[in-house]
Amino acid sequence: MTILIDASLRCNLNCRYCYNAPLRRANVYEDINLDAIKGAVKRLVDLGWSRDIVLHGGEPLYWPREVLEELLAFSYKLTGKSALQTNGTLIDDEVIDLFKRYNTYVGVSIDGPGELNKFRCGPKVTEVVINNIRRLVEEKIGVGVIIVVHRANALQPQRERLKEFILWLKELGVTGRMNPCTHPDPSIQLTPQELTMFYLDMASFLEGHGIRNWSPFRDIVGALMGKPDVVCTFRGCDPFATPGGICVDSRGEIVPCHKFADKMFYYDGPSQPTRLEVLMNTDCKGCRYFYNCRGGCPGNAVGFDWRNKTRWCFAWKTLFMRYERLLRFMGIEPVIKLPGEYSVEELVFRPRPHSDWSKAVRRK
Amino acid sequence: MIPEPEVYDFEIRPFIRIIVEAGYNKLRDELCVLARECWLAELKSVAEGMRACATMHISSETLFRDLKLLEELGLVFVPIRECARVNGFAHKFYAREPGKPYDVYGVVARDYETGRKFAKADRSGDHITVGKLLGYPECCVKFFIHMWPKWYDPIWPAALNTPGAKVSGREVIVNDCFPEANILLRYCGIRAVPHLVCNFKCKATKEFAEEFMQFIPHRRELINLLSQPITWDAYKGVVMVRMPHFIVVANTMPLRHRHIVKLSLLRSEG
Image (cartoon, rainbow over all chains, first blue to last red; front, top):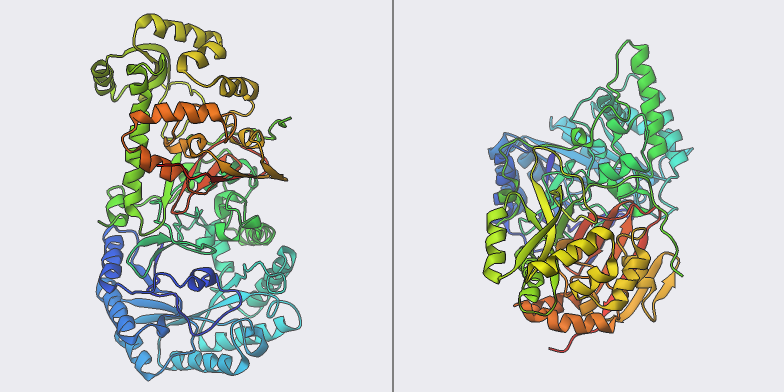
């Protein structure tokens, strides 16, 4: 589980597919209460839930610099490291110094070079981001990228440029994630079939070039190996209790991941079997990979109704099949449990037994 | 004509979750207070002679406390059956599991004779007598008999049965409902009447509520809450009841298609 600090949802970009847009448009929760944020994060860390703290947002580098520094320092003091997710446009000398001082891992969101990044920003700004990635690597700062996969970068001929970009990242020693874009606009989002073809092609491409550690491929393998620490997509999230990630908002309230939320609700934790129970009896009934996939992200559910499975089912199932065969070919037995061989309780995230969840979440 | 439900062949285990908008933490306590008062009103309405009987679950874990409460109210309890204790909203009785806490379902009355009369009617499935003893409006009892057990969570039929309901596919919008007949928060025990209403503009229900709410100290707060716009959204065994600052999520019928009921309520005087 990752603790995401959303001290502010403000951002200097206006990405067309941003899932925070409804909350940002409402312009709510913009007064940053640093003490409350730190108190909430500390309670979660003390509970033993996670030591992975990520400054998220919005754009963390767009926050007041003193807020950024205080939260990086706080995270470092608490865990010996810090992390943030940025659009990479606002990295300067001062920020680099902060990253070095607080052992910061930097996730950069970029969908590829030039036009491939058009849903995020124009080519000039994209060039700035690419230069900043290079600079972070030169400065020996840990860096990864999140590529959102959509119609501007996943279809041919743009896909070939994306592959070149990934090869360039490989030379820098950078990997990351290729996340499906979930914006409902069909001019942005891929169809499940297109996404499947994209992932299959990229899986072969990465293997052909000896490139490892890109998500979702590493996570599909991880899920098949029974590893608990896979990408949030396969953690069995319920919309109001998201074991994949837990957010602390500007007021210091502990809220679930708010993909597609138009309101912040209290985290209804520690974890809930509701969605898993629904899916294993309906959409995912009898599925060979439900134990590993858990129905996917509720934010990507068919019809945006979390009681449905993910709309990317076809892509995930195809990848699970591909990697199951590959593992078996390599003589590795995947952890696959068929329906009836496990109970819903096995799929639910369980924190340490002595965790007093209500005290952590329900601040007086 | 209300169609039969198309359902999956599974049931979600009973559960209830109240999801509160961040920043409205006090709401959780307020809802608990109202639910407790609504539950007590069921007993007080019998004790004060408004109606003959009320049903009650007595838990094996709170036996002494519950029986003491009945004694203080001058009520008697006639047991009808044992059933499993469930964490959440139960639409029916579940078999008791050996070694686990359980409930005794029974009837509360002012005297044993009435209690036994109810128990006999309950066991024989005489819903008319049961409804009369509980003091429920006749129209609602008849509607219940017509819907039960296929629509065991009969919100959708009640919406279709409401005069002026605007139906669009599997979505119903009903305007100017009586807050007293708004039973959509019953999953968390909050309601102005203990029965399942035949429609959301039921005058008999409104009259019943006016008397019943005398036993609810925070009746003004209750009616204000029940006057807010509310959406009932049921699908695959899970219902979400959306209110302006919280969502109730609970188990319901495993409907194959999403059914939505939107109520806008008349503001109550007072």
